[in-house]
Amino acid sequence: MQYWNPVFECMSREEMRKLQSERLVETVKRVYHNVPHYRRKMQERGLEPGDIKSADDLSKLPFTSKQDLRDTYPYGMFAAPLSEIVRIHASSGTTGKQTVVGYTRKDIDTWSEVMARTLASAGATRESFIQVAYGYGLFTGGLGVHYGAERIGASVIPISGGNTKRQIQIMKDFGTTLLACTPSYALYMSEVMEEMNVKKEELKLKAGVFGAEPWTDTMRKEIEERLNIAAIDIYGLSEVIGPGVASECMCKNGLHIQEDHFIPEIIDPATGEPLPPGEKGELVFTTITKEGLPLIRYRTRDISSLNYEKCQCGRTLVRMTKVTGRTDDMIIIRGVNVFPTQLESVLLEFGEVNPHYLLIVDRVNNLDTLEVWVEMTPSLFSDEVRRIEDLERRITREIESTIGISAKVKLVEPKTIERSEGKARRVIDKRKL
Ligand code: DLL
Image (tube, rainbow, N blue to C red; front, side):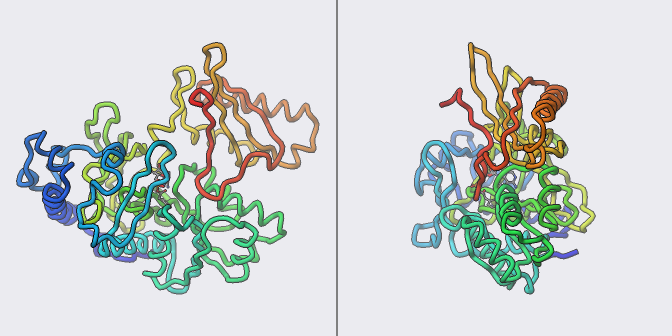
């Protein structure tokens, strides 16, 4: 088992709590004195920095939302002078203004550290060749992984996203051992590999660090088989730092949160009340070492739960369950709440379909409708219509019995659903167009 920094990764719970408390106290002072927005919000609650004495006082503090970042666009929430900011990224928000995030030199150092831990927990060493196929640019994926890989001393291949045939050629010729990209792009790469007649045995690939979008364990199995690798889930968001907030170890049983830098909470999204370990709710983070853009109780809208038990890998860092969706990508069909990942799990249980799907939601005569498009395997496609219709019926039944909604399932020809080189788009909600 491999740690990058066992002092923090395997620290006792008491020591961790103490460290978090000290760092939280400093962060609260920093934002109170440097960020008018936080000073005002704390004053509204009658709070002064001295009222926050330990991590137990966290719930006294106000939440921060994406809207707060938009209202203070672009730099209003920065807690360091702009002359100290050495890097700017922006989140990939689809609606409204982008949110802008800034890093001081120390923040970049912290980010490299947490990303080094992430990559090491997926088996990376100085000997690794890490192909970074996350996009470089304002998106945090590319440069985030890049700096972590350099910190380890691995050989970085900074190819960025896109140009899939070239990705495969390079993976083969350069002897890539670890691939970093979104899970949907990894799947697409495996498909292009087949087209190019490149066999997985010809590659040196051992593992992949996949994230930036929700994916199921069934999807993991699919990727692991197709590429013959360990597929590791990595999580993060630009506002908190980028990738590196949390990642799985080889046990693949929850993502370890880098708690010496980010304190997690789970809250009830409706009431804002903190929930106990094990309960599912909205994930909230407080950054406790950041200088450029420290955030207090940032509401991620991601749904997860926390597990404080020590992991078999020896790490004591709390684990979050795989993020199954966001409070805002839940689709409500005739009153039933559905996450795209729930449908993904059902679909991928059927061997005759490929893991490419699209959900189309509409409203016809005041009634919500859901169409599920999923690609058939080439062998099914060349089969009789009767078999195809039979499969459509079986999938429809399975969706109805496991999720409780009726959907129209449409098996489409192989390679008709758009492939993604970054974050996949799974839902078209025509009700919102
Ligand atoms: O996606 C950072 C990142 C890059 C993470 C590369 C992992 C790998 P944003 O563009 O700000 O940052 O989007 C953050 O993406 O709130 C989640 O909803 C979603 N997300 C990120 N990682 C995962 C994951 C990057 N492993 C938003 N599972 C987050 C599910 C994820 N959702």
